[in-house]
Amino acid sequence: MTDPGSRTHLSRDTDRWLEPGKVNIQIVYVLYLLGFAIGITPLIGLVIAYLNRDKAEIWARSHYDWAIRTFWIALLFVLISAVLSVVLIGVLGFVATAVWVVVRCVVGLQKAAREEPITNPESWWI
Image (cartoon, rainbow, N blue to C red; front, side, top):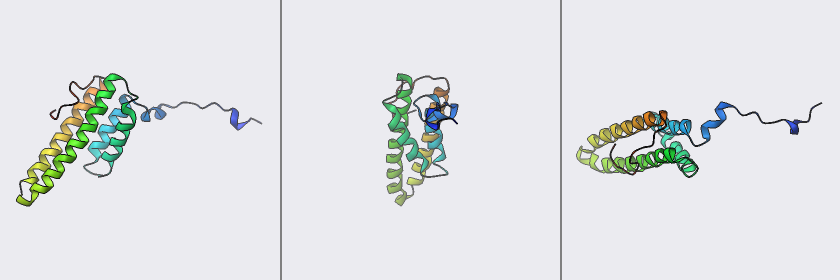
């Protein structure tokens, strides 16, 4: 008989998705995009970004900073749009915020696929 404690843990490729890096960053962006259909997923992406930001390489850290700022700025825009929806201009704010989030996520996904850093992760623009 073999001792169950003596078994070595075999690493699988799927085990790496929680570690900081390209796949993890892509998951954060996809969770943000899924937020348009499933409202809670951006919060999960935010938590993942916060957990991995300090452990990441420099290029990956810029993506985590970008993703974290995208979440908080989008939340600010949504709150402002909600207040302005009383005078109907907030609807345009919701649309503009959605477009802004999608563009930032697509840019982030493209750069993450090439393992390039975000040029200015502190920016409010694209």
